[in-house]
Picture 1 (cartoon, helix red, strand yellow):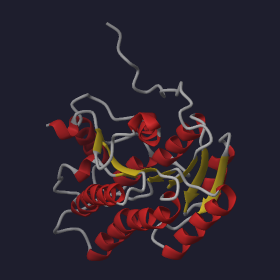
Picture 2 (spheres, rainbow, N blue to C red):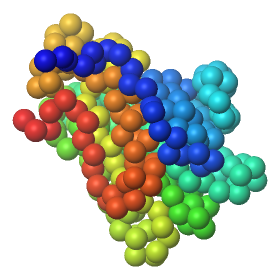
Picture 3 (cartoon, helix red, strand yellow):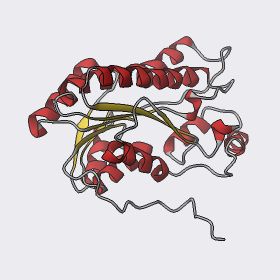
Picture 4 (tube, rainbow, N blue to C red):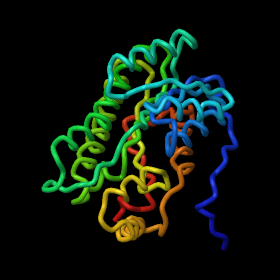
Length: 264
């Protein structure tokens, strides 16, 4: 029996997204960069949106049909400008991936309320504004909204009170949006993706917040029955599926890709 090398990126082999227009937030690095690359390889014209405008420009330059745009996901006016820009150039938006987010460590006793508010502002309000802003354009042609949540939105951790709260909010907000769009006959599907721990720079940021990074990493590994962390391409593959017509019957669903974490 052969085993898949989980460290090797999975390459796309279909072009399910030819000529579609996609917007990926937090696309300058990590998971967002992998998602943007996968959507572009599947044929989409991808807007890489990030508060790091230089990083977004670098990532967009690597894509066949990429464009970069600066975006603070917590700013309603910036969202309006971004969607208007996409509309002016393409006249449509087919795929929105709300990926931008942060992970703040802390329990109910240790997490500062300002840090809690900051977590919610980016991870929840940012997704809310993205969905609300994009609907105006997407409802004319239909499309797919994919909100990147987390296994932490389905399973609690004593040391992630802010992150648990934020990602749980994204989980049910996604379902509410899906129901609204279905009842309004917009032709827009909305689903959430729930990764476990993925090898991205955000892991390093989390480890920098804790007193014993080695112990924390060992805990990450132990939490995944499959025995290893995920690769960004693992998540990008599910996003590409949800962006395509192959997932036309999926809406309001939570897709876990967490190495068995939430099965425990």
